Length: 144
Image (cartoon, rainbow, N blue to C red; front, side, top):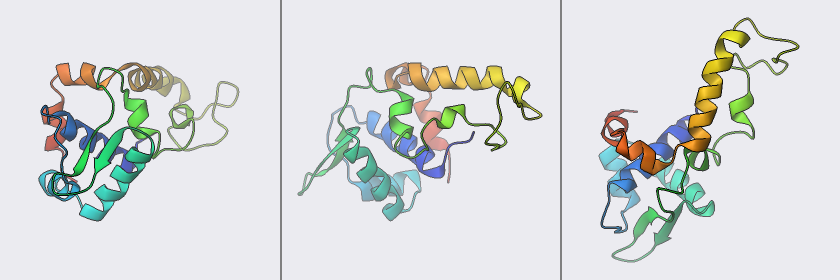
């Protein structure tokens, strides 16, 4: 149960925008350069986040993208769900479609508790919670 590259980059984009405390719109081209990501890939991710109401965009000389939601109300699951299959947090870590309590994979019971904690984190932690844990700097250090 690993996140897709699009989900990882969506999280990086949103966290990068959180640092913009002036709420100014930021150009995708500038963000892509600062994060070391391909422009067109990041633009596609931003478009999905705009369509899902996470970001807003504006055209023109002062245009770009900005957060559309209060970080206290935005959960990690909101950011990654446009890029992941439905119920992705319930899938087997080995990718087996029939894994479960009645037909467990070899690591099902070892993974079960960890998966529960990860699922809780995605559904309960807001961006504001993560900001206070000083993860923004660490996430932006991640290189593609």
